[in-house]
Image (tube, helix red, strand yellow):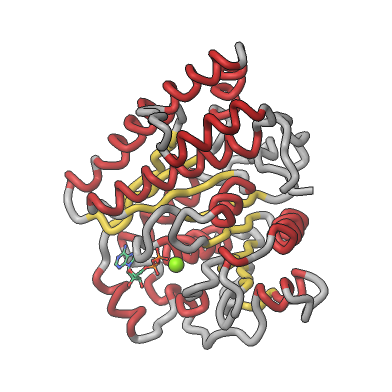
Length: 319
Ligand SMILES: Nc1ncnc2c1ncn2[C@@H]1O[C@H](COP(=O)(O)OP(=O)(O)O)[C@@H](O)[C@H]1O
Ligand SMILES: [Mg+2]
């Protein structure tokens, strides 16, 4: 794998790429990705949704669509020569989809070359907003899709297992980020030991790790800390039912700062809406809930919070 130095690409972002992810399945990642897409498109922007949950792709169902005949794997396997050639309509104005349905290739199984090709081609697509809906888990490819975006949005439900999974996702993300940005061999092995938590090397917080790095390579710990501060990670708590649920987001942001040394912006909570679940079971498109659902009003507010112009291309380059 080609290694990356601690360099950033210049500010050239033509599009804004958001990855929607987080540890666990069933927390509403796809529902929120589709809904944010609808909200941004309704305000007049050209938006593309990418279903990168190749194992259990379901974004099309939120639009009441049958599984599209073409999808991301047709580009990966070269059946279609351009990524634009696998874009399909959603039935919603300004909103297009690259489906993951019927894909034989799981995202975890994409080779390094295939992943690089997909990521670099996504970056060149000419949509104002590109939303990548990720599957569950912390495999390297999922983490890399999250890291290549200008902004990553974590979705968790208020359940303790889901919250715990989200922290695990953030920890894996940070170690992946560090592992890819650092060239020094000794520091790399330190990070690897931290990931595996073997050889008696266990870091309670990222600060302990940075301190250990600082001892090997003076100033590197400080440099890494300043790079970590450039990560743009946001958080949404989905399916909230009580005020206690609504308070979780702020608390999680505090914990992230304390243990991971990173800023996570809490974007807001989305209410549980029994009608959405009922309607989806009947294959009703999400559009049917506008504009009456409280959950959609909350998602629309979240959409507006994430749309200030992103100046910096904070993702990695996979050249
Ligand atoms: N805010 C919500 N209110 C009601 N039901 C929801 C809400 N968010 C998600 N769901 C339900 O949970 C199911 C799983 O959501 P989905 O977006 O597919 O999760 P993920 O992509 O994280 O696996 C949805 O089909 C929907 O029925
Ligand atoms: Mg999903």
